[in-house]
Length: 108
Image 1 (cartoon, one colour):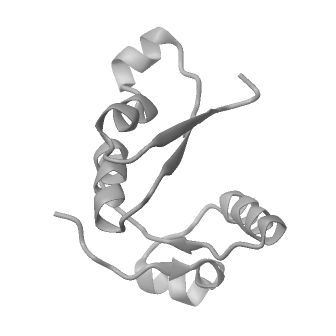
Image 2: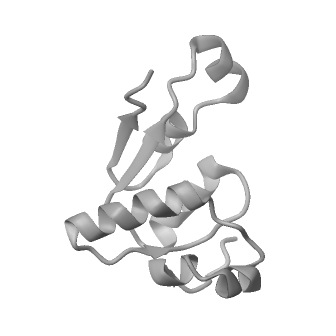
């Protein structure tokens, strides 16, 4: 079952005191990228934190938030690594209840 915690505004993700309350340390580079994109596109970003298997949690989030669409990244693992580790994006594409767009890493 998914905990129905509140959505967290991007401004709070940058606040160390707030993140300490949640017991997490967001990746600064990721937060910077999201902040830049939000500013450029003039959108409000809200985040929700899930713990557990990314494949399952992404599919659960689609239903519980709810989302109209989902965009996920793809690291471009080779066939062997993908077979061993599994592909989060492939799982989500095949199991999500909303449309999913997969964005491949441009450096691969």
